[in-house]
Length: 395
Image (cartoon, rainbow, N blue to C red; front, side):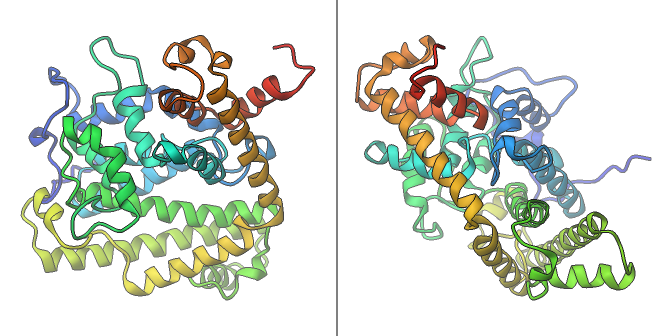
């Protein structure tokens, strides 16, 4: 039997949306946020996430997470949390599905390389690129570029990590604010406030999914073993609890049982702390959430510290593992060499991209090349590099 959840007063109501940049008739069968979710799901950028990896290159194994599977897992957790908090599940889901659209091939290694290549042209940030994709680069509709998403979805996309300007903005957000400014001038997104509770939930659920599933992938890849996790907060106690209840459980089941307990512990803490903050703040509207001086969706101080320790473990034992370092080194070279060649020789770009460039070495050409490379999958980037740099390639 389906459960109808009444929205809390501080939830985003699609009927009260601030609308879209380009006015459109409302759908008879879907809310505004449901339409946003569906447009994201049908976008080219979303399909490409299938072959964009987070830590491992696409060909290293069929069972490692990709940006696509990660986004689906974030969406599931975000919907569950939003439902229990009386928030709008459709908006949280749309934001969870869209949050990685701007990622380059090869995960953060590709982003770092593209950021350095674009250093004198404003740099590169995947959150800004996500905004570019949904407001300009997706070209599917007859009447506008982009997906023409609602204000609330765009706001959550650019501000899910917090305000970009004003007294509550983190220092590292200044560059993002500058990059977002041209769009904000056309369609103001209130960059000085926090985003909606739905966006905050999607952001922290991204953190939950990322850390826990990297434990799963790291164990599967043999980058570390279960005994290395004994002293890691959240993780060690989860494995110990499973061992006590199921002595001699086979390794794959042991890992899955522990990971699901880790996710449950973090979600339970998130719900408890968020409810505590909501009770203290007594917000009466979504705008009251935005006006608060701190996020309303958060871990408790104890869980936040444990999560930082988990991230420190993953940084040392997984992201800096020599096998990952080799992939990272290769990925950076591939991205940088593609950028330098195409920026200097825009005639090597496919016709549709070459038509948007304006000559070798220019800022406009740099942006076109950046958009082209950022949209590549791991596989396509490696193939394109082979075609351009292997002297015997004829394609």
